[in-house]
Length: 445
Ligand SMILES: [Zn+2]
Ligand SMILES: [Zn+2]
Image (cartoon, rainbow, N blue to C red; front, side, top):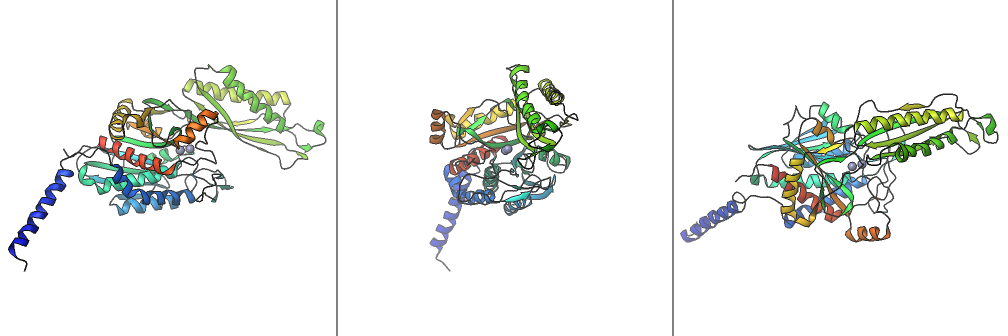
């Protein structure tokens, strides 16, 4: 038996320690994780990032990716459901009375052949939805978003004595084909699980130095429409063009004429982008094929401009086919449902910007201009949940300065060379996400 004075010292020490702990956690609101708190989890999330980068999966095929994330959040004590909206995951942490806040990451990668030269570059090949074997790469940084999401989940779970509310961590499939958010909503994301009071997401960005947070109240991302044009000609021998109607020449004319929609038909103050990202026809040089297929991406901000642009595309395709003497009208497939531009709830966005400036410093948080890229994150807002999509710079500052001086942009998301500056971006992403969540949760004051 220990002598009395030793026992008394022991009791005193334990009491003093627990009092100190409650003064540190219970008494003081936790508003931003410290750099030390993030450093402690960094090796784990960097390893996850590298692992995810090496093993990307295409839209609605993200089963391994989802399983990896699900196992992690399950181990942290989240209530995890997989297979939501086909391959999505929902992880819920109920932590007392308070708001419900959703943090979403995307799970999917792109059919891009990686050319970063990184030691952990992807060499994955997969069958796409059409059954075609394609190279796959996390060329949009969704691997980075997932690693940050996992880090944030860990910090929130380990410090659950320092906030109150319900945290809903969502791993959304198929963002790149604009179908995953709707798939999850149709599968009961807001009915089978706690309906969020707020929804947040963070996307990497090529225009800001690594770690800088960008926010934009109101309209932020454009509407996106995928359009397919198939033009028909008359095939034949390459040496006898007079006996054919060459669909490659016809398709080429359409490609160039379409740019006049932007340059000559559209009001310059209304943004429009028409990109022909894929053109396929023919098998070899000495054969004139009988058809060519073009795949377009059309970006607009308003329904009027969208309707006018899609109509102009149909008209030009038809007109050029007539001019070429094509045997058949081109087939132009436009999406049945209208997209929507991402709208960041202004009050929410400004509230988060304020909290982020306080937590990360004024200079680290900047207002950014709207972009022509699109995001199906808009669906959560359309479903009635105030939402904010924030951005995070992911480029080495020196590289960004050099690129600006040279006038040559750095590789951006969707480029085979997109390689975010991992450590500063990932660390800042976790701090920003946790700061945003803590701002929205009722603190245990
Ligand atoms: Zn993307
Ligand atoms: Zn993306």
